[in-house]
Structure formats: structure tokens, C-alpha cells
Length: 265
Image 1 (cartoon, rainbow, N blue to C red):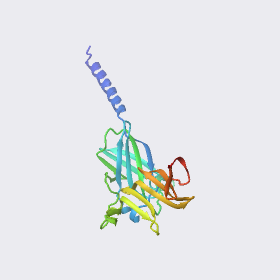
Image 2 (image 1 turned 30 degrees about the vertical axis):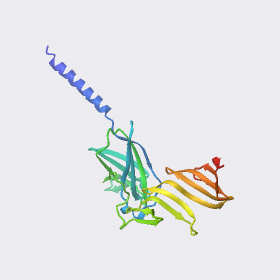
Image 3 (image 1 turned 90 degrees about the horizontal axis):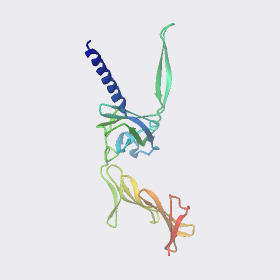
Image 4 (image 1 turned 120 degrees about the horizontal axis):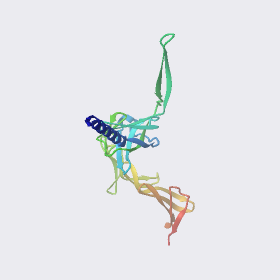
């Protein structure tokens, strides 16, 4: 009796089972978390001048997180999706789709019914920061698109350059610098009409980093009350009375909420 055919069949079956097992272990990239920021006012009031871009990406043991800056229609970031094909990660965003039926009557016996997806479009544009957390990507994709348009990680938000930077010189210091992309940089100072200081904040790419956020004068029996920031977070209120520091309190940004106050000697 020839055992070769039976052995051959057995090997084929084993190889098929192994192959199916390997395919089952291949993890398809999945979107496990998506979020959109609130509407941000667009500089120049024109979304075509804002550069859609990757702000950053973070690789963890279980996922890859993309943060994307975009300018688009106000209702078009409610839903996020992804697709992955040929080393291209496709990030997708759109508004809530309404599904309706389109009925076409051909004759008495034939009727064609199709589903139609409609996305509401409103007459406003906003800038948004989107977050896509993706499971199953073992490495950073070579190409990333957003709604089928190529996006890359770039430093500046805006495509349109100013003709020149804007700034002021005070006591040989450069302040209130706005760069060629319309972003606040370095120290910005605002004054009251009477010349008293209202704020002194240090910016990097339009983001407040640290400084004096706000000053109130002659409030609650104090000469002035100052609100301070560090690393973009409100940290301290300083109270001055009779020209001297009276107390320092922790804060989350509210002037009249005293917590953990330290009184000056």
C-alpha cells in the first residue's frame, strides 16, 4: 500500500492549519480612541490659509497616538475613522452621517432602493486638534493622509507668511513679537490706558508658557492682586497691601478662591 498520498494530504492539512493560525495572529490596526477639541478661532479667518499638519505622535507599548491640527467645516470632526493600506495610514474625520433611502421606480415590477449618506455642512470654519489612538501599528507609517490629503509633521500652522515680523522695542528689549506665521513668540506685555501693567506672558508658538497673566488694582482692600502662570498652568495669586507683598495663594485661575495661602513676614 502506498502511504505517500496519505502523508502528503496530512502535511497539506497541517500547513493549512498553521497558515490559518498565523493569519489569525496578524493584528489589523484599529482606532481605539478618538477626540476633537472645541472650535478654535482661525487666524486670518480663512481656513485655506491654515496648514493641516501632524502636531506630534507618541508610541506606547500598546498603541500609537497621533495629534493633528486642522482647519475645516465646523460640523466635520464629530466622527473619526482610520484605514491602513500599502504602508499608508489614512486618518478620516467627518460629521454625523444621516442615512436615507433613495427610491427609483423603474416599472410596475422593478423598484431600486439605495442608501444615501448625507453630512450636514454649515457656513463656518474652525481650527481643531484631533487625537487618534491606534492599536495594532508596530511602527510609524511611512505615509499619513487626512481625508485622502497628505499631511506631515511641520513646525508652523500657517501657509501664508507675513511680509515682516511685528514687534515693539522697550528699554532695548524686544517685546510683543509676532513672527512671519502670525504666532506670538517670547514676552508679550499689555498695559492699561494709564500705563499700569496688565499682563506679562512668555509665548512659544502662540502658547502661553509662564508669566503674569492678569493684574487687578485696588480690589478687596489690596493695592493689587496678581495671577501667575507656570508651564501653561495657573499657579499663584500674589496680594499686595500698602505697597508690600501680603500673601501668596495657590490658584486654578480664580481670583477670589484662596487656598494654601502663605503670609509674608
